[in-house]
Amino acid sequence: MKKRLLTLFFLSSIISSIFAQEPQEFWEWEFEMTKYDSLIHEKIYRVSIEANQQVELIKFKNRNYKGHLNNVIWTTNKKEIRKKRISNIIRIQDSIAGKLFKNFEKLNFEYIPDCEKIENCINGLDGETTFFSTETKKMNKTVSFWELTSDYYYKKDIPKEVMTARKIMNFINSEFSLKKQFDDFISRLPKGKYIFSSIIMVKK
Image (cartoon, rainbow, N blue to C red):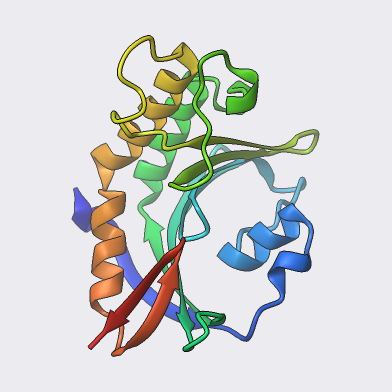
């Protein structure tokens, strides 16, 4: 399954002032997202884990599908300020992108509500946040879930919307492990000090 992901390449970039930007501009800069073009695109789905990993799936008007996985990490200095972004873009096989997209559509991906609008949906400050985004000619929507896949916080009476969001993550991980892809990306980094989410990592 993992071999379905094709060759990766690294893109580095410049010192950032992205937090002063609007949310959509932030995501576009952080992940180098595909710019929606209503002439050729019907719909774009994105699943993002913090600002470190994003699956982007594109449905074209000619019913073709494309997708890629982007892993992102930053170099940092002694003051733990983000300095240089390193990104790893991996193309997802078209047939897998189409399979995932169709499965997401069956789950009404674009109509999943934000966690804040769901009864008994858990929010927190620290921890991992997962974002689901939809972009069409008439819609540009992003919702989020905190610690979506953690059984530590969700023990019983899990909201059905959270279960739906978990199914989306399961669909992705059944094709390729997001954790393994990010771990493999980190393992290939040169020696240095890095930051992702709130984690500082020193590679010797």
